[in-house]
Length: 327
Image (tube, rainbow, N blue to C red):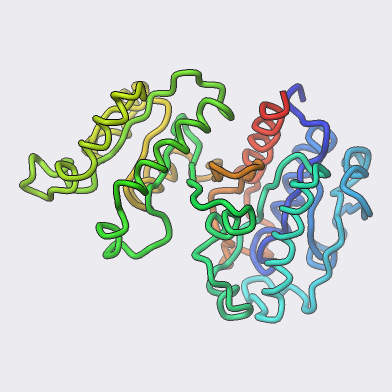
């Protein structure tokens, strides 16, 4: 693979009671030595009879990937029962993420791909104080703000507010937050996606982008003045646009990425276009991090029917972005 980085990719196991173990194996079956990665997790959590190669150092994954799924052992206190997360395993799930971040920052892994976690299980089992992976990775990296980009189906979309209740969005959506989100997205499109003059479409918050103030004034009071100021700096921004008309095929050809105002405004179009192959990319980190754009899927865990497409896409994108940063 021409875009494969020199070092292997790290894959943190995520919640072992979910589909993470089986999609990790499925991704290895699809990629093999073409794109070496190693799993940070407990080998006992993987499907019985899975071809595994235990490694002591990330570098060993490059050769090992031709023979089996490379596993950097990360012991858990409890077995993995599909669909039933064990509270005692929550600290180990968190520690696997931390270990992956450390390996990437040390240069021993080219990028980090994270398996899906279950936020409630982490909160109940380890007092996890973060809304999700994105916020926790920002904390580990010592970064004030990052952005969550979803990629798939010809769309890149970034929600300005992420894992908060809808009722809290208007208060959380401030001009500084939106400006930082736009700047982080703009910089990432240039650096990581090789777009020298990225075009960014910005959604409104309200139906019909407020319709001149009849359906809300956030567009008039906050979004439009900010976009005007950033356009004066040379950023190619369109909006605020009605969210219900900016994601059809013809509209998507007019921009390189879209900024949405809240979680579902961003995730509904991406999951409609690329439900099985969407990728979550954390922008603004000092290292590359991607993940599959789905959760633990407890309802199908352990049945051998989970599709690894999104994880495969996430690993491929991690390799591409890491190679681009290294060039």
